[in-house]
Image 1: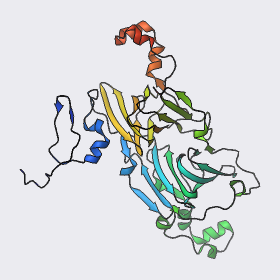
Image 2: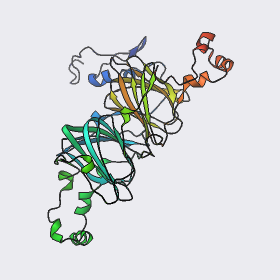
Image 3: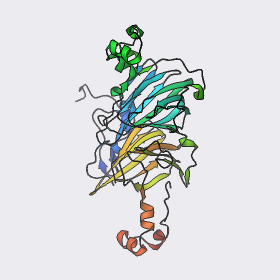
Image 4: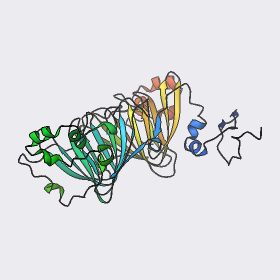
Length: 389
């Protein structure tokens, strides 16, 4: 047995053992991955039944590189349980363009770092230009043409969320791709110029456009476009982190949806800051699935699927999580720094139910007889939403 080619000395590692159940691993191991997911490696006793995978990391996603930056996506192909939304993590160098494009899906963007300039036009032909920075968001409804360009010394990095789980960043309607597949005489007739004006159009769009190097703008955003119709009255950007948060015992919550950001009519979201050891309380969402992006720290989440089924997952920065409609869950900060995560929904409104408030607003005798709780515990139930405890 000692001559088996896959056997080797193993460094100190976790083992799938809880109490007197389980056993150590004798075969091959991926120690780094095991340490990232201890609650999958040795599931808690409260886990039961079969629930599909509800986690995928951007570290495991293919990263497509362009001369101006990169992009990696998590769609229904990477995370089959995620049937409502898809996400793209994108980086643009200083001056780098995400070229002029549009798509059939709405695009909701969250700035993670740096600065960018976004442009669009509305359906009445009025332009929109704004400069955004970390903590800002934008939303371009389906069909609205737009662009993004990195600014400053570092450029930018951002998250994009799309209201179709089948969305792919590789299938957008690019202006350069459209022109490359339109006869030159049609372009000339359409724009009223000679065919020779289009002699130098990009031909290898896959390699030279999409995300490509550009020159950082030298004019202020208000001077970028002069239009006889005036600028668009529609505000496609929103200063998300400048909102006053809902403050809780263990952190903060900010919610954005069509009520405070009218341009976002198909995607609602919240950003949560959970202090070490604290908990985004037991809750569920009644109006759609929850798509999560972890921005900072480490988290543990148990998802309850009814019928005696539950499964626990561990997450860290750069991971995507998912909770199907109605499933009860919590998120616990298991690290030593604040845990920050974004939750997004294919909906015009953010809505959730608190387990604590549900019981606090139910007749006390009823709750007592359901759960065999004592009077002291019943007295601690809340009639508001604790949010983070």
